[in-house]
Amino acid sequence: MYREYRNAARMTIESASEEIGVAPRTLAKYESGEIIPDAEKVFKMSEAYSDPEITHWYCRNACAIGRAFKYEVLDNVSEDSLHMLEKLEEETEEMLSQIKQARRALINSRKESGWCSETMISVGIWFREMLDVDHVIEKIKMEWGRKLDLRKFVSDHNKKCADKGYFKKKRGA
Image 1 (cartoon, rainbow, N blue to C red):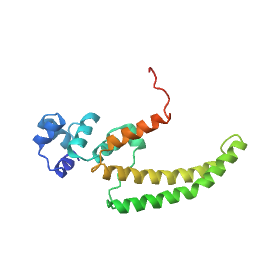
Image 2: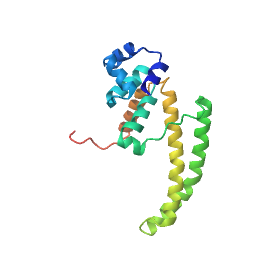
Image 3: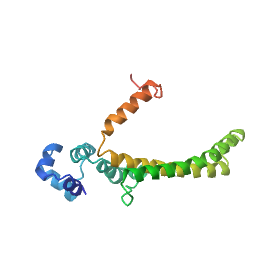
């Protein structure tokens, strides 16, 4: 898998290993599956090859948390930017259509002091629709992350959230 990403980036094993900070022989072992690289090396590969999909793939396949919570890569859908935005709009509309029912069920559950089966069903339907939206967003982040500096966008977003007071103080601070 890692070899495919390196080849797509048109890098030799020597130039890639130098940029990643490992010996060519070590990179060859990563590529053959003989050795599993640590997350830091995968992140460096992602940067060297300008492909954020590598980190997604690694988290999905080499990390227990990622196996449980990371989506499969949508690799059989259009990568056209306009099509992805249209898909996001479609999935968002489906999610929004379920919000009123989920909210009504939650209001009723407050009156009943807990979630009844109707609440679970309504919220579950909305939650599945929300995951569809999130999955499309992940695909857009991977595709556009090849062109945009996602780290800067995430950093700016985190600063905005901190400025709005959305984070509690860090422990030990």
